[in-house]
Image 1: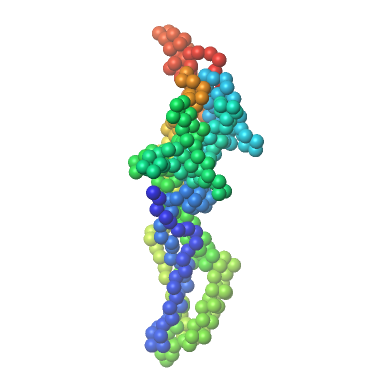
Image 2: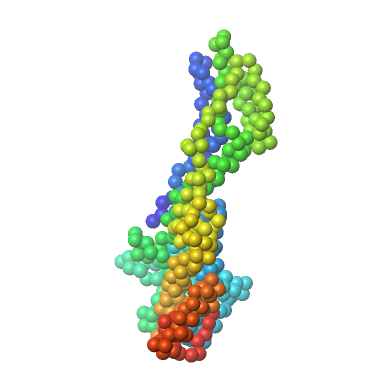
Length: 389
């Protein structure tokens, strides 16, 4: 499903070839070696190249996961409320939901397992998506999910009689696969690779005295050529004495017949700063995070930070949490009954406090709606005895 890609942080060496005695042999000082081709879209590579090595993608994943996990979930069942609020030893319930949302942004798939006490769930566990795969029978029909971890295989079948399954799978839309989702990080893989390579180029430029590449040319009037030993000595001296930040500005002493020619590149051709900013904006766009929230300059889509933050919550976080709540309700209703309801409690989200206050003021001043209608408009249940995560 995914294309394999190489690590963009480890440049490939450029093959060196020595010229024959009858050929000129200019000594090239490389600032940046040939880059690797392609960025992988498998889960391990996305974690390594995207989340671990790219600060923009890393911040996007954390911002979405932490924000979504902070939204309380309101439920009509007190036992269900305890499940949503209970974490296993070493991990709180908020950390469990944060891991669930993080896996979804990185891999496009996320899994909850219900820890059972007797026959009812008592807590939830979030599983890494790369440890689970769809199980099939001899005819290729889906039979459930299988988890292979540390050499141990676990199967999660669905009870045909009750519809119960201790594993819940949530995926992001993928037009090419009905069983596995496509993550924002996979969609932004090319932009992530471009951003990472721009950083590698900038570091290589700094490591080589922050100067463009050049050629050390031996062109004596007598037409003599450098011997192999002289060629290697010049190359070693250039790399050891005139490369790196500590050698910046150091004067070069050339012997007779040697001349340094700078291979200059125009700023318009090598404007990696602006190129990386465009790549950063593409990454933020894939995740649904306004660039203004990431401190990316040059984006004036929103009038101010508060407007960008509200758009982030309304267009990215609330739909994600609502989808998760609906999925949990459908999954856990097999255990707690069809009357189970789970929904995000938007009244307890600080980022939406001002917006909710305006709505409450409008509803309180409206004389043409009943209290039950006002609660429905505000997204509240009309019943009582609700539990909240």
